[in-house]
Length: 218
Image (tube, rainbow, N blue to C red; front, side, top):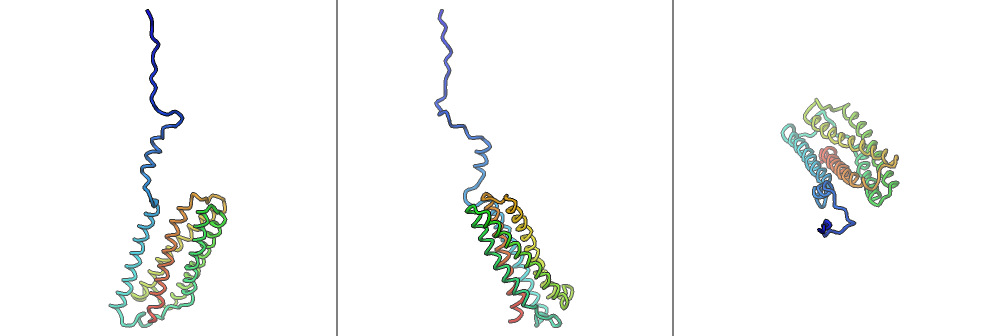
């Protein structure tokens, strides 16, 4: 009686290519094409944030319309231009080194990225210091409790100053990371998304500068 050897069936599948891991395939399917989720999240936040500033500016002009024919009201001097003009130039120029850092990190230059981030952080700190100095000078003649003009003036200044403080703190963290060699090309998206926040804050300040310091002089 003859015995037949068992036949082993093989699948017609090329050997040498490993099957993709299920988790990797699932994550690949979850990542949308085009812009990163962080970019869209920042864009949505900035739209909401800009709407908040727009509402505050609208409230500022509404109070001007209903409270007094003279704006600022009698007893409130015009806000001083010197310091406000200086910090306007500072925050506008701070966008240049941040753009250099963004492009440098994209091309793999950690030195350019570190220097650009550090210079932008120093500009942010200078803006904060001079703006606090400006607010302390304005408080000598006009306070938030004095009238509607003072309330809206300091709310707009303070709300924007908070944005610059948050941005400067994040820039300092990036500068420390760059000094430690931990800011690499794979963090380019992080810097790019943060740049959107900083550029928007600079643009909003230019608008506030025109509204608070120049429109009252027209």
